[in-house]
Length: 463
Image (tube, rainbow, N blue to C red; front, side, top):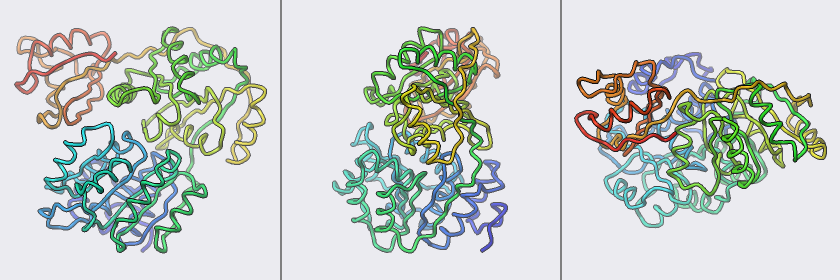
């Protein structure tokens, strides 16, 4: 079929079309326009598309359409493998949005860092779709908690990152145990040799969707900064550009900790993300970055893989990565969805040759320019994050929290103006809400004294 210009032209089920309408989606992105028709035909697909291009709906809509129309059949029918829990959470959220008008669809996140017994309990009750990480999913298959008998579709999202993280053996074991007549989909931002070999083995006559021509809208710059002057150079860059949101990448967790501490001491709203953090701490810092109460995140590659923060203004390579594909993954987090982005690399004189090699391999122009003149102010966030110890399982909705925050004090509300409340995230057993920093302490006090939807919950500030 010809490439569709609107979702209405696609033969999607009425509940999926209804959900797209409610979400305000009318025109598919390029990856959606090319992938959805092929996947609806039952083809295997090997897709290359950067994060933020709409690839989750590109495979998610056909995945939901393939489910048994009799949703009382709660056998596992689709599996999405992701390299990290953060990406799995995002994919789960997007699939639930797409399935919002399909009453009865059960989508479960199955990842490490969460209690295995609760996941097994949910699996025993029956689910249609599992989104998870390879290690925990393999464990559930081996325990018999997940059965592949009815599985019709498997997706590897960010396949290159999955192999980089050492999950190849688990992925192969999972694929080897799935029905042979399944539909298989690989998405990868890059195609190193190991990804190509995996796809050659497990995909059957796949359609190849490569979208290298998508405009990245990223301005690349490099500044000369020797190791002993690099921190001062970073402060100059951040103060000059004053990004609303930025990720600063380091190659080692020790340097990430040191840089995050220095930025905080310099007055920046900064946080850190590295392998020493427990999962709840990772979740909190990512929620704060998404809602704007942290403006600069300092991270290692391994910790940051799979995270997706839309509208990220800037990426800084505080330490230059060793390979070009890592540079692609780092800088691809800015300049998304039509919004311009900025990628800055700080390099020593000894690293200039490596920078030139990366630029040549990627076909990029990364000019070396003088450091910008710094402004005086630091990037101080105007929002703070409030933790609420109740969530989706407690029947809480964003409107319930918003109502408690904006309700008048005489009826137990916090009395905030609606414009003082930012992003609200509802999870299974807890929620995050961003509020204007000036009113955060008063809001917490009011919520502790009052009730949300008639119930009392633990309430704290995260920063």
